[in-house]
Image (cartoon, rainbow, N blue to C red; front, side):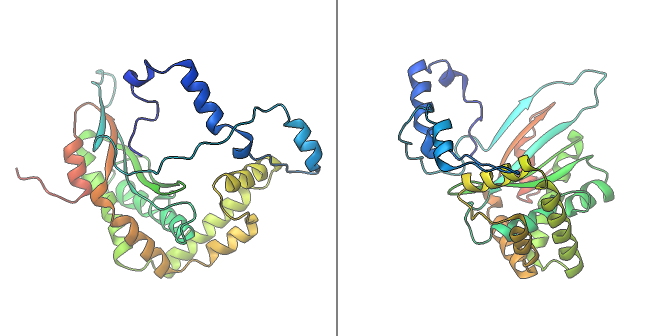
Length: 277
């Protein structure tokens, strides 16, 4: 939520062993764990309890409510390139998303795929194929318990960075402004369903699928049931959730690595503001 994932040096330096142990005991506890079994064998509850008997017990601590936009509007890692390197800027821009259990969660997954889910996505066609601005570009949504993060990530030449951002957020605004054509929607859903069913074919993949849904407190739908939910998404639903995401563009946050500090210009590009001069 805009804090450094690794933590700040001045905080890490002061952290004590007792603080780390207390944190671990508060969250990594049996009440927060899920044992998932998949494949040709079963595991009775008594046997499962015996296997996990030595796991330390603890009472999970309530989580703090998430707040969007803590920290700076952007984080920049400015470093010069050598003469043998081609100057590049790698960047990720994020806006508020939706919580894990939001009723629009399936429509958002379809919208995200249409916008930036692969080589057939709008971002890929607009930014790479038509304008030659990037090799790779994608959109991603990460749902959290009480909010979410919707991100667009890519890399390009520093001189093309602002245009790349403006075009990318322009594509998001287009989905919010008008319904996705039926053929495009059908192709996106077909690709998503195919990927889902292929990705859950093995026992380990199946265990991860169900364990991940349990962790996120999502309904324990089978992959086939999940495919049905995706297939049922309509163009108005996709447009509605795109409107919700686009409404948060004013809260955009940015992280990038590049040879100069372009933070303000890139934020302006996301907001579609043209700088004088």
